Length: 339
Image 1 (cartoon, rainbow, N blue to C red):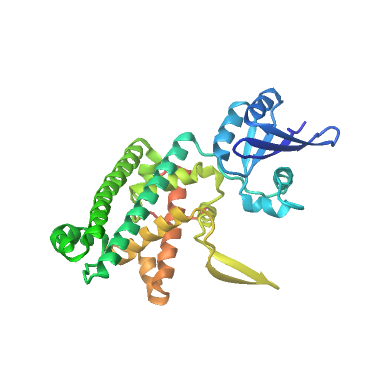
Image 2: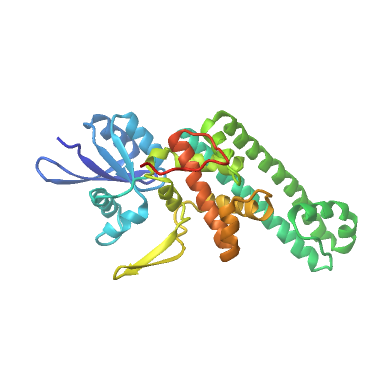
């Protein structure tokens, strides 16, 4: 007999369940607290629990540990099945309905280590954004008093230090007192970003999959660790193109009457990892002395940004192939189609 499928809408304290009894066809909808939900999971026969909300990875691991099967769906695939107004009960029913559709692609369940690593990346990204905002704010405030600095964060920070006396004599005392604290905060942000990067580098040394991906030109420690943690299991994707498509690195398609038009990249999936791959590809095409031959030919007939995205797509496919087939990166490797 097939296992019962449950639609589970997650929240911070209240959880909604929806399922259909496979024997009688009777529908059930229950509202549970966190403690009640865990007790319900412990006392039920093994089934399939489908979720599509924040915190789903922790719940997926918890559900699997209790002997059930956990399936994660992207919320945008569930939204079309909400019949009326958005409520917890309607969302749980929509999740259950979406799970019945053929070809619905699940999201790989992340391990605790992968989820923690992505948390480090989010903390580092927020620190970098805060540092950039503060540097730009200081540059703008000083520019109102005729003090101009070179472009670039590192060069500007160096000039802030060497021209402290000039800044102090030029701007009013109340503004200077706050700006001096901002400069101290920038040094603290540098230390916090360095600590986050050291934690990421330490994880890289213990993860063979990330070390394998790190060997691809254009992929460094930050991108390699983010890619491995975001991908989860390579077997969750049918091919390298499927993985690249999940990151939004393939063109959109629209067509009718047998004619298909390819547009700009879809920009679906994780924007953070897509940005890292595109920046890495940009470095390879603009600064590397060993650019791929096919990329050189593409640069002749297409704009630079098109070639950069194409290389980022290639990097994502290569990373999936290395992890899925357990190979090491070989610069001159040429794949051959099976006969």
